[in-house]
Image 1 (spheres, rainbow, N blue to C red):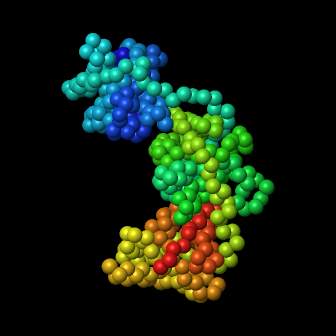
Image 2: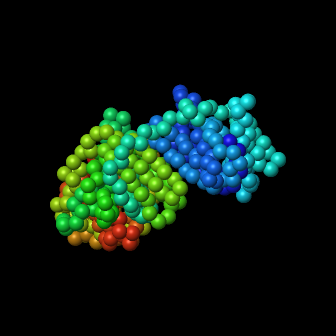
Image 3: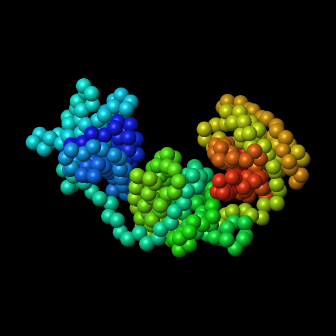
Length: 380
């Protein structure tokens, strides 16, 4: 194998594929990236952790086709430190079991492992297929991923539940909906159902896959092709292909916990609410991070009382005409929700101090991805 490629393109590709490679591996080949040079001027880079596989293709001037594997993070570090715009020459020295890397006056020799030992994520038949815009997929991820759980005991909550569902507005339309919850909060985002997605099974995309996917679609443009079965999913965004196993389990019936009947409505300026909440939560304890919301006609008082560090409170003007209400929340959870709100105002719908609340944006976002959030209260 011998080729020349451009440093920036190689670095970008390595950034995508090496992110799935764990720093510590008991299986040496999993620490490596597979490099495969084809005669038609392409270099394929592949990395896997046996649950996720990322493949990216870049252009290269191939003198001799071939394949090898080298330590992923070492190669990434070397290329990252090369000058911007540099040319990188890669050549395999079979006799010494090394891959030579040359760029300008710099040269490196990396130990290799046989490409024949590199595992491939078995590509079973992916029966369903559809496309959606990269910006829409990115919005579905960003508006829900913060609510994913990371508890091992409830592994089926350690990801985003993606499925076709009836629209939340009660209309006859079907939407593509993403849902995440950790039992204390729930985030839901939905968009018009892409053509071809009507028969997709409900799937749970693992937490790590969610973050890797976001990294890829963040730089992608136009459409992303989605192929899936009930066990695996594949995303193709430009010259990057991500294949992942899915979480095998049953996502809970989340619709039952969404309090559509809450009748006490507060409309609040998002910027004012976020800033005030951020200030008063400075004194909230790390355990629980409790903040109390006291609602009266036309005003919201946010307060924190911490016996270890003191107290804080701030009042902001809101629209609220229901009976006075006091309710407590984890300040971090409230800030996470507020960070997702794109409109200038948000609607908070309450029932009583012990019941979950519903948070919506006052207007549908321009990108067509409509979010909804549920928060469980806490004692303060």
